[in-house]
Image 1 (cartoon, rainbow, N blue to C red):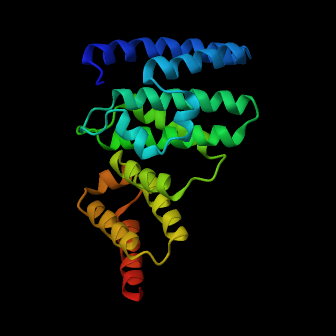
Image 2 (cartoon, rainbow, N blue to C red):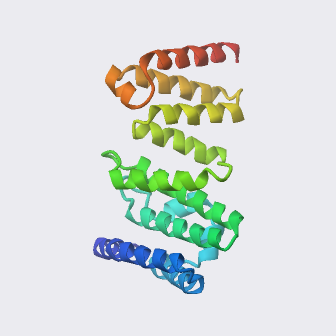
Amino acid sequence: MPYSQDYVKRMIEQFGEFLLALKQLLSEDRRAEAREQLDLAYRELLGMQPQFVRDAPDDYLILTTGMAQVGDTNKSIVLGDLLIADGDWHALAGEYEVAQTCYLKAANILIEALLRQPFGVAKDDIARVDELIEKLEHFDIPYATRERLFRYHERVHRFADAEDDLYQLLDAAPDDVSLIEAGIAFYERLLGLKDHELLLGGLPRDEVEAGLAELEARLGDA
C-alpha cells in the first residue's frame, strides 16, 4: 500500500532523532539495544525484515522505496541511512562482509535516488554520500556501484573524481566499446563548460582534452 505524503514527512522527521539515538547506543557499545532498535526500524519504516533487505536485489529495493517516479526520494534516503547504521553495527561486531553488503546497498540506493533528483543535490546529501564513500574505501567497490559513482561525481561537479571512476571502470573492462563511448561523451560534456567550472571540478581544460584524445584513440583501436 502506498504511503501518504504526511506519513512520509513524519517518518523523515522522526528518523533523524532515531539515528542520533542509535549512534549514541553504538558509541556506548550497547549493541544489543542498538540491534533491537534497528530491527524495529526495518519493520516499522519499511515493513521488511532486516535479513530480507540485506538479501534483496538492489534494483528491487530501489523500486520498493518509491523511485519509480522521478524526484520521489525520501523513503530511499531513509533506507540508505538505515543500511549505513546497520553496516556500522556489523562492523563493530567484526562482521565485515555483512557490513560491506549494507554499505554497498546503501550506496546504490542513495546514489540512484540523488541521480534522479531533478534540481541538483543538496549539501547534506553530498555529505551523506561522502561519509559513505569513506566507509567503502576499506572494501572492493563492484563495477555497478562504481558506474553509479561515475555519474554521481559528474552530477555534483567533482570532475576529477568522475574521471578516476571512469578509469577504474576502464581498467575492469578495457575493451567495452560502450564504456569508451560513455567516457568520450563525458569529456565532450565537460568541454562545453567554462574554464573556471572545470577548475572548480578539479579537471582543467587541457586534461579534459587529453582524456578525450586518449579515449578517441582507444575507440579507433577497438
